[in-house]
Image (cartoon, rainbow, N blue to C red):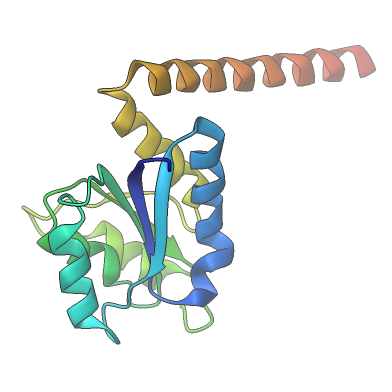
Length: 165
């Protein structure tokens, strides 16, 4: 069984379409993860248990996504000693996503949450992989290749555009 190094949590199953992008990028890098629903408001006991013990289970980074008031990432960061990456999600009760962005971004001193763009779970997965790569050469090499492939894709698109004009 693959060792789980990253935990992906979300406040509701309605967040899954966005948050699965983090899982997909972690799959690309061959990084094991766990995924669950942990609501800051509806299951506070589960939140406390989860955030208190993630590092004991061998997790190295947490990706937490939430919409609306978006308290989940900040509450996880308040409890866990691990790096937390917050994914603001534009949800049905959201004010164009700004409430989620600001709720995750504007954390008080001492409780950092690395915040990605609205619905930016793919970047959250990449950032989690980069955190893990600080102590894992194999993952670092995969990230280097990933960035090289992005560069090559842009180069091809640039050349295609130039040749069509």
